Length: 215
Image 1 (cartoon, rainbow, N blue to C red):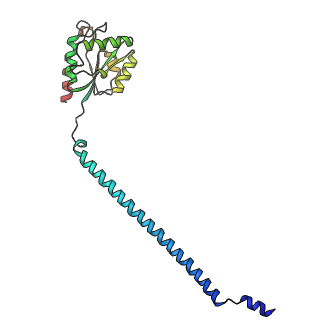
Image 2 (spheres, rainbow, N blue to C red):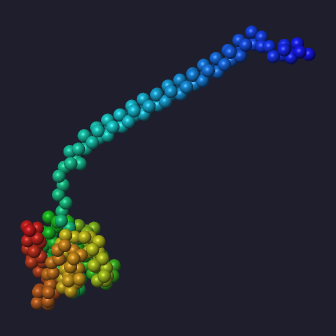
Image 3 (cartoon, rainbow, N blue to C red):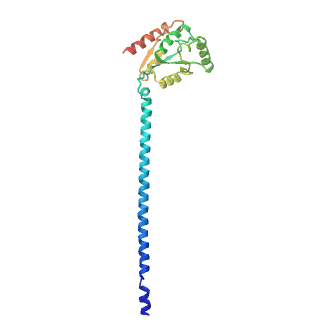
């Protein structure tokens, strides 16, 4: 019995070599796996760095290509809003042709918006049609900058949204209410004596704009 137990615990030389070879194989496999992982990570880093360099180079080329345009000095025109009622529109919403000339003169050097209070949409369309017949849009006025509203509150909201540097108003009371909301307000009507055939003279407004631009 003792001999059987002793014989069972004895490891033969061939078995010992087999165990050692298995251990060595496992170690070598682990080393190879680590080396392959490190190699793959190195390749990934090299590829990422190369891609970043290519992107930087491409961005640099694009920047150099568009640099003259992106850094070209640009002068933004001053935004000016003008109430059309009693400046170029009479009490019947008729367009006064001779009073379009000052507006065309303003539009040549400013970003001019025209705001008109009208009773309904049809009245606005009629005003645009009159201006088209008078070739106003062919001489410098912008059709998409003619804006209509039906209430005083709507007019105030439009003017505030436009954020003009100068606003020309015909309602003295409304001009007072807008003080502080618009940097410069020019009121071309203080009483009925300022009116000629129901329409204000815009030449005074142009002179006022010139004085504001100079200062």
